[in-house]
Length: 276
Length: 349
Image (cartoon, rainbow over the protein chains, first blue to last red):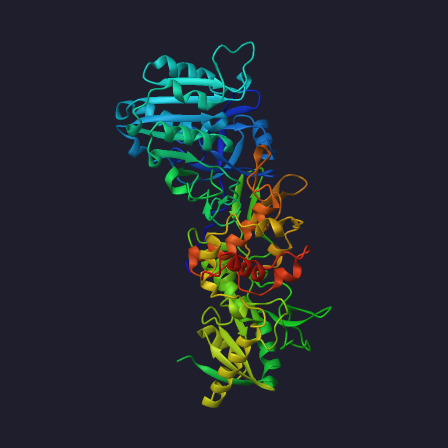
């Protein structure tokens, strides 16, 4: 047995450098790794973030891979760790380990069209891939972004979405499940956006992240449009605790979302009853 | 050929004394109420040679119910690993428990090797013992849990009223066996006696048996996802996790932490968790990926009968029967579930 004087459970410090509220409950956090190194993640991966004295929880990385030691997480205030995270201020520290998990195979997307399907907070991990593609815009074909949110108040990254649609080289369609007096756009589930875009299905790769209930319907619609099943990528998030494929919490049948996922090619998980 | 020795019962107290100077030594002993368990050896403690099953599975020696992984400093925001690996001898593990230990070894070492587990394992000496009696709920005889040929340092088989054949599995084991002076090399007759004792042991647990070859279990489960059996049993499940707790191969854990009352220092530890507990697959926002007892009950049987097999080629159930006995609702029973599924599948295998 190979025994090392190293524990994968020991996190390393990172410092909060900026904090920006995105909605009532969601905040964008920018961190710097204290070791000065880039996080060296790929789009779709996650980290385990610790607030000592409170706990540790997994978060998707929202920023694209960077040369610098900064990275971003967008986090909804919903449990113990996220409450504590919202209460810290720039200059204070957290601890992280990772990045962990599989990622979107961005090289396969080169020269192809990409359809992003972001339901609710699903935009957060997809943003990493999207921003990577925008930085290398010329390498990719059309970029179509569908964003669905429960109601207008919960929309996140609204200024960035505005800039996206203003660029001219990204087709952005947004909808909310329930509108209100301020909302002038589409109303309806994210599946109602799909018929509004004309795609070249054989040439399109799909990157999809959203609430559990979303996948089945959107995948079915993508298939009906003629997008090959093996060109559909989803991120399935579960309760990743250890991040190392050991603790059992994130199992999808016999897959571990933390090491086999969170990003899966649809054809690799379609036979798994617990996946979608 | 395996090195074998013949050891007499009268030699054991001296060996136990020697060993216990350097190691925490655990031996099977009565635990009250007609139960047995591996208990710390002390002078005069009577070894329960005829124990049927240890109440607690051996995993607690390698993956303790609570194990500190990291100590941290909240002020400096630093952290360091914690490794604890007491030297210990587990004496008298039955083969099905040895098999469970071997399985944990394999699963914990694969992928990202679990350093905490491996250190404990490295500091642990395993001495197996062929059973002389069988627990009424056990079925290891038909599920491949009766023969294990690796993972032990010494393997003891009772061949006479006060004599044992001891097979050497490692240099460390042999060194420990010879720690109190010379031991007789086994004769051909002793080895023959041990062979017969092993056959007897293997026959013990045949009263409760799978009705088919155990290797077919993953294929039977493969077509049983929608079987009515899951509902039939799961409606009675109290989600207490007793089956997880006593299972020698269940190793799922939670990671939690505690800080001191001045919020200066703290530790992060792992603690046993169980897939039958309602919160096991619960995520933020109150979404539960296995909300129903049926989902959880089925997951456990799939893990034991298929998922583990697909990874390492053996079942995740060793047939010890502990869960059958521990289940508060009387529904944990791999033997009954697997047999019923086999019958349901038209006895096809």
